[in-house]
Image (cartoon, rainbow, N blue to C red):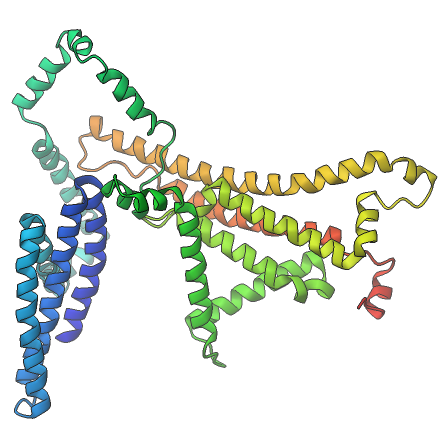
Length: 452
């Protein structure tokens, strides 16, 4: 165990601390959340310096100059850290700082207890039979069912105060004058469907009077789109920076994904044009897929649940399709395509009808692409919010210590529909490009005499 055990404790503490700090910031305010986060960071840095000090003192070369230098730096860092802790106690809530300071120790104790439990004969006896394991879990659930709701019920005095307030005469509303109007005006900002809070929402709520926070909140879809794009760039960089003949997990995943997209798009657009258009279409499909799924991560959001993002993607496809048509057909051929390629008297007579139809069809493509993607992803978010809210309302009649996870089946549905919507967007974009490409009179003739 040893140092590896401490590293696992630090990793678990970082993930737990991030989630706890975001939750506290959302529901208690910025200063408590910041106090909890900085308390966790302070404790982790202190443990790291203490580890360095102990290693320097107990190592075989403890009497040498490098060991003494490491010990002196660790001890000096601990003194500076204590000074910084004193400053934090004067600037942030002490109780939240203390809570953050104790989080790594709680994780340490829980991990040690779990190791002792997993190696005990009692644990082996419980897990040897699925019936005994099920009975133990059911016992804990029933115990929590009876104990936790009783501890969470409000005091009788509070209930009486609420009842007296509810029974108060309505004259108070008239005495308040303009108060109801202000309340209605204030509630108008929060009217309409509300999605799950993300970390930008948390920052905006914690800084209600900061202009930069409002700017982030207004452009959160663009920020999340940039985050997804940067993550995909980082994944592609690490997967291709040192390719191996026997690929690692990331390189293998990327190669499988690229091969699937190439074969899929080639089956639609043909092997003659696949190499030219797969980079654009494949990148588009992966990017939309990642943005669709990004909202399923806690405190994140799907950029494609914003019509601004989906319409921007559709505009890019629309402009690229027109560019492909003008470049492949020439300006005259492009106009001839929009007129319906008239080659006889009947065709020319139908030009006044076919040209507006083709123009409206081209203009309708980005609208249909953007609205379809936006509607499906935004609908997924609202469906999850509705079933999470419904699961929370079960607390009122079930007396469970937690709400029912009614949204879990719809999370699996969201995985499926997010993937399908990315494929639909990519397939339709591929078909739009295919319709703009020059059509050969014979397939074999076109292969024998490719256009340059």
